[in-house]
Image (cartoon, rainbow, N blue to C red; front, side, top):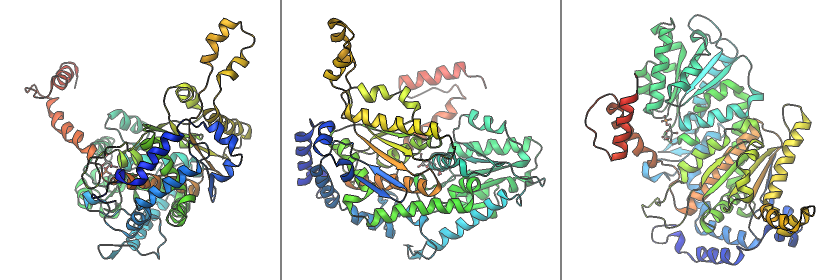
Length: 548
Ligand code: F6P
């Protein structure tokens, strides 16, 4: 799409609106009745991953129209631009090459006339060597003791991805090496971790692409002060503090030696960076081979995304179906529900991935978009969430789509529990789709008198027709997790391209940062305040009640 022909002025856009109006009263219960092979027609498989998208408010016609939309928006052309290193992050004049991080060493991708693949592998090899020496005990603390704890200090993309992957791959983690994550500038986050570690056996990884993020720098400084207060010396800093950044001189100014600075590249966005040296904490946790399998999983999904026909392309299908709801049904949210305790931070990672990428209402050409775009992403691990928010999914007034992610096998060989877990996931998607009619509710209440049945039956109705995708994975291993995360990255990409958004900048988080910087000194003085009445009142109240 270009500015002269916005996507919402195309004929296909109008056709999709018309199609939504004419199909919106179809119930999935009837669609399944009319199409007994609906699962066979509407699932895709790639290696150990299966996507069932049959429980959606779609027909073959819907898919045909949506794929036409993807063609008109030139999803394929934009994908090619991304993977060959064109500067598609136009507002920051940057290439977008997280897919290059997953390429084998012999691949070639040029940015500004330079093949970037050797640099990627050079930095990854440095990270593997460092992690290996920590894991095998060769790398010791300043007093010669084995490293027992790694603390990753970073926020946003320098935290969410690595933390989520480390938690998800816990069965692959080396015992005796504890990995901690500190993100929040709330001192409680750092202090609660520091309380559990010995400075002589701890390595701090300061993970910040820009090395300017105030929360990270403050936590790093507090960690450094704590380290020195614990009887460690200034010279010991060089052994215990590591940095991952693209701002090498800033990390050096903090006191980190060049050998301990791992480079991040300008063309990787924070929320896409877990595949880079930002994954150092993950590499320390699971080792080189497992991390390479994680990259290989991402690459397998890339290859599928680049080459599979759109009608059978997993990220494209997920992107189009999501867009169908958010733009044409104007739904506002999408839930991520992993039936896996290890994936309990997946929704948090995908919140940043999706909402920081597509939470925008202005096109990459600066035009206001007058249709609904990026959804609110939220979620929680199953089955816990069934006892929290599922009531609203089943009987609330809103259309809410969701993704159920279910591993078929668990590393914890308690098969009885795993079958209960899986049965719950399958039952929920069935209930959400099928619902329960008033007649069915009445039939269940035959033991009551008529008046009580009239009161109770409507309360027992489940409207159903609530859409969901189900993703089955053989197990949560590095390869499958790599496929899953890359799948979501491409899903978000597809939606951003069709909406005409630049999914790779994040101007929306800047404004609050600037205001916070101005307000912070005001909390320590009695200078007159010049904000709105609410902000003035809150600062004033804080000043009166805060104890240093
Ligand atoms: O939240 C804004 C943001 O810029 C994210 O995009 C990024 O992941 C995060 O801050 C951390 O940035 P950095 O790695 O530069 O500290």
